[in-house]
Amino acid sequence: MNNLFGYKKRNTWLNHTTGTSKLVGFLLLTTMGMISYDTRFLFALGLFAVILMQTAQIKYREYAVMLKLVLIFAVINLVMIAVLAPQYGTQLYGTRHVVFGSGYWSITQEQLFYEFNLLLKYLFSLPLAIILLFTTNPSEFSAGLNKIGVPYKIAYAFSITLRYIPDVQSDYHTISLAQQARGYEISKKASLKNRAKGAVQIILPLVFTSLDRIETISQAMELRRFGRQKQRSWYQEQSFSIRDVCMFIGSLIIVGIGVALLIHNGGRLYNPFK
Image 1 (spheres, one colour):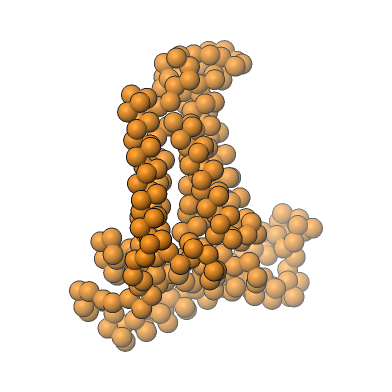
Image 2: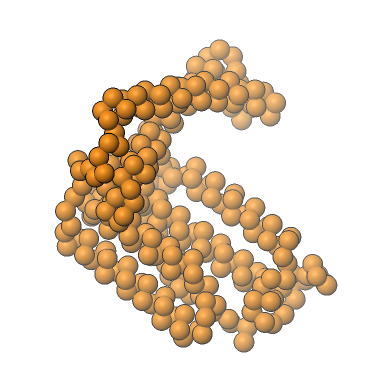
């Protein structure tokens, strides 16, 4: 498969930046973005994330599946909010401007604006997550987690998960071709029932293959006495450079702008309805 999800070595400045600085930058920006409900800040943050992703030379086909899943989740979440709490935006912004409908189930400008802000939160955090995952070697990522205080056993579990995502994808593709050769039709031309049957014939072998891989890895780690020491060194650990300092400073500047807007707005909300 040519479009495996995960890390790929590229000659960009983001790839050469250490996993620790990228992880800290990701946590700072996403935390500030999730706290703020200032539409201007969220939109600018999303635009900044998209520009960063372009500089990282990440192709659309590499993250298309991930993008579609996030959009599906976002749409479902926004619809459920509109159904279960259609007047929450009105309570939040303190005004009521009805677009259509009447009573409790009316759709207001405040509700639409609130849900638009939620959508911006999904859209800005996704590119940042893609940059972190696609430009960071799994071993370097685990070293970065360990540097910021995460126990190395947990950090190593993240490393193994990221490292074997492409292998699981490759196994899925291989099993899918094998099942199609046996006559299971799972393309879009087949009916939903036949595609469901074909999916079961793929998922079950994939689960057993993954379990075998987990057993092999756990035995290898046990034979090497993994976890015996309180600390460990990292083969992919990198020393900090000027790029990392610039990333730290840039992240802090953006967070500072977000905090300044919180103070200026008198809270988390940017209220255009006043």
